[in-house]
Image 1: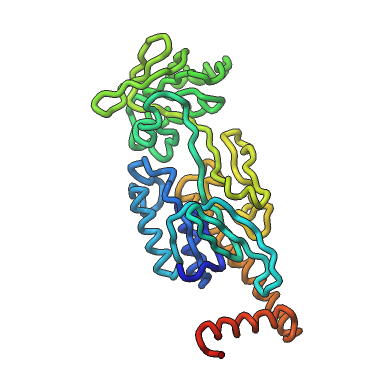
Image 2: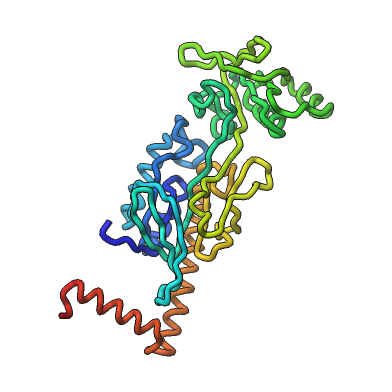
Length: 344
């Protein structure tokens, strides 16, 4: 890149980030997307529940989204962000943010949108992560139709296990709850499970049985095997927010108890002025279409915030044409003209 300063930097090139970037670019804002190339849903065969895009591969969705961003003048750079610092400057643009990357580059922007998603923390069971997004999954709204009527086992890892088992029962009549490390069901919960013909199996799962690259069952510590074609697992969700710590922002426990997220208001604005978040980094259970919508919402709020600042600056300069800010802007213009040979 020849210009390391833009109006908005978007950190994360998933559905939320690209949707936000397109919205900002269409609003004639200069936008730079910095993406590490590690999408959370990469193992999945397709994106579902996204109207008109149902079944598209995650990779193809990102390629098409990136094409739209660049079509409107946005820029995309594949690198990992490691830091964000706020700079206070006595310039017409007011505060700016410096974003540092792993490869040693630095970029500045008036506003920042963070859409880095989350990490799925999975149980430590051999081969489980390798099958994640295939026949080991967690969201029935993302994958339920594809595994309908199959033999589904739900791995109990916490208080959501019973809810997850009852939910998957909507997609298949053959559901088994493996208690594993989950709390013992109450009498009322056992009654609900029994009423829905969901069997409950005690004992920890120690391994997966796979034949011809297909899940066929799970093995318990007792040596017993439970047959299944699909294993549903509720991971713990941890937002990717390490780069925000220099701004004083840290992840906090989500009210749902499902993991840690970055707090924000309805538009994605964090407690740090000028910094927004969107997608799974703040909404742990958002599907792709919801994350995309959140990116658009945040982008509109960012554009409105920039417009408000531009108006304040224009009014101040109109009231006092020789203000410090105006003089700084004149110097900035002259300096730029000198670089282009317009002044000696």
